Image 1 (tube, rainbow, N blue to C red):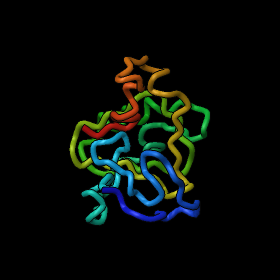
Image 2 (image 1 turned 135 degrees about the vertical axis):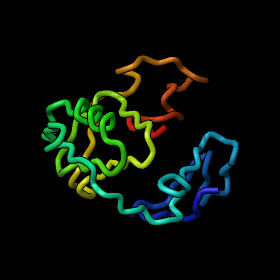
Image 3 (image 1 turned 60 degrees about the vertical axis):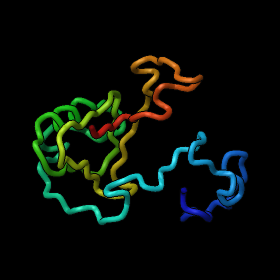
Image 4 (image 1 turned 45 degrees about the vertical axis):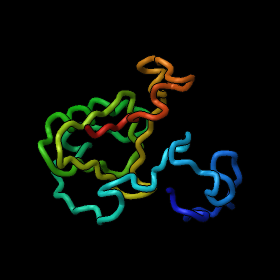
Length: 149
């Protein structure tokens, strides 16, 4: 089950019909998705320091100005880099299509928290349409804008 308690945020615990106050109502087969093991190696090993293979701005022409659509720079980078980190310098990068990464050993590395922001101004439904699954968007429980296959 997910971790118990209030997590690391500063907001107080909240009650819900699906979670309860401290997870006592959580059901492994219920509607709440368990993200407690999301991330590299289920969060049980440190992220490896992968050598930088490319710079999204200098090598692929991304602007990172929060206005220009930088999608093509991302698509070109993930298509051409064979392995290593694609460095995303400080900035706000507009992405309007899915970025699908099909090769192993590819890392998207930003400059740090609050320095590199990926901005998705449209929903996947707005871009690709929707085929509802059980009354919800088909994207509700599936891959998002950045998808590692």
